[in-house]
Length: 113
Image 1 (cartoon, one colour):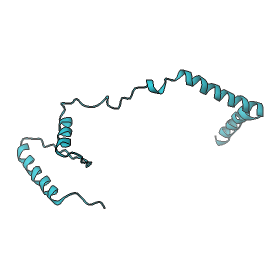
Image 2: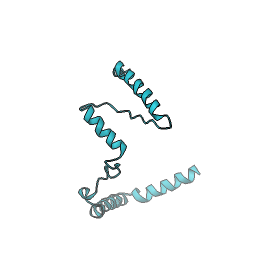
Image 3: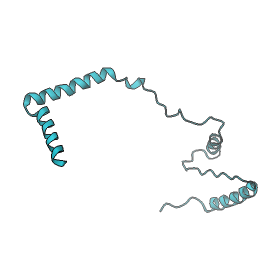
Image 4: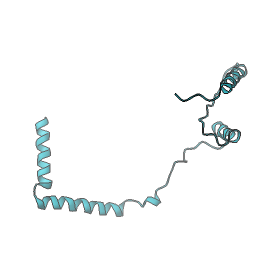
């Protein structure tokens, strides 16, 4: 199999750039293709940026939490951790989480290793 691929590749190279005339024709074909693509392809300024197209609605809980974090901690570049507590005993567990987070906050930011 390797020799068949090698022979096919050698034949292709010989066909496309085996002589100066063929090499020049190959280069001219690439230049012509690039010129055609310049007219066919859309202009860069006509392409839309959809970066914000998949954002959740402004009333979504994650968006409300993000606005609250920015309001309460202006200028902070820390990554937030949003903890969601669910279940029948969510209120009791939320109180436990609040105490645990307060304990972490009292220790201060984690030191970089």
